[in-house]
Length: 526
Image 1 (tube, rainbow, N blue to C red):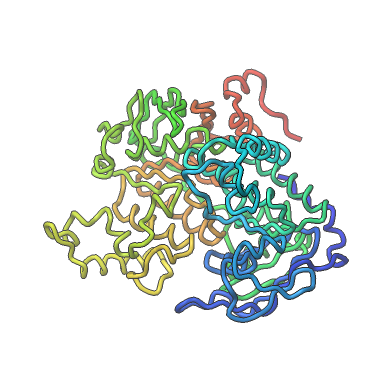
Image 2: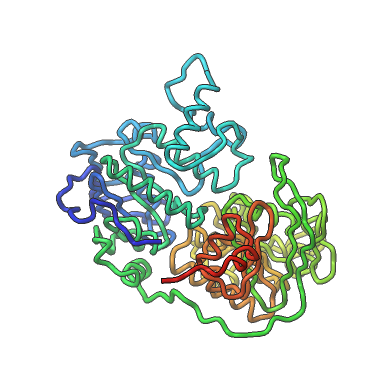
């Protein structure tokens, strides 16, 4: 990915501010989320907002987008004081936010979600006409989605495209984007960046929240960093700031970007996937003869663009989806088309892609969530009863071991930041000492410090002898952690590599089998 700032980057100081947030304070029970925060967005710029999970970035932007009301401070749009009591007020002022957790109605179509809440159409719904408009809008911005598809039928990546299109349809002058590239392949990220550069060239402004420092360096004009609710660096010129410095400002210490992985020989086969065929939620083919093995003491990486069968494969292995043909065996025991309990009993641990709705029960406490695999066993399980004293003791031990930042273990997990929520899931799954770990997008949406912690835990599982299947769209992560990488495209395995390069992986991810690439010669490097 090229580090090419927008055309405005040479003269950022000459542009007038379009949004000013002054001395913003926001408190929640027991938490000071924003502490006298100043933030300025200039017209025609891409301004990156960085910070650890829980640093206050989303809170600050939710205030700007009308989701929250600040306890103190002022907001100015184009020099005029404003007060937003709802997202509708913010959108009328030209400010739209694309949230990390989607604000979509699952049972409605793409087009219906985009039109939801608008004054037009009022009485007559010419749905076919608006479907054409939505399809054209998606085509213009390089974000193709089926306007007739229902949200629940879409992949996570496709749902995020709907959110982006929803704000573009409303004509927002300021677009707040919270982790917009988390589900995109490298080629799609570059296409999105082309779209953003086109938007700022027309005078629109973008606030770009991302934990991916290479993306911030590639797309933004300026960077503001939040740490523990306060500004640690304001309006830095991106081209004059190193990635190491940005990471240091975020977490307050040096960050290791490439972890040491000990050389070791893999052992016996733990997971065997043979000729799996399956359908997606639309009843269309999602997996077409997928086969591979994962061995003891190795990490097998699975690369691919979102929507090519990764989710369905993970669901089949974990017992959440039935396959039409084929077999999945764990330590010689068939676990496909069985209950989830069968996999758990044979040593399967699962870190799902959707940590909020699949990985946890949001309204239950930290204790309730971490004992979900232990409540049948003593000392927590006592017949039909749960020993809550033992459960709380277990939860507190995990809280300390996995550094889960939470007031107490009775706190509902819906109140946790993304990084702490992922730590809860990892604590529950890894404390069972699994023989096989299925990790799907385990670092998505996490800050650099949390990513480093999660990756260390994955390597620790490998060194402990577990077999690990890492499904990720982060090529840098896959190449750093994996012993082997396989690539999936439209439900088929394109090939396997031990020492992959970005160019070859990219070609495989877009549908070229490894055999064909090798027969035509390896990609040429400058």
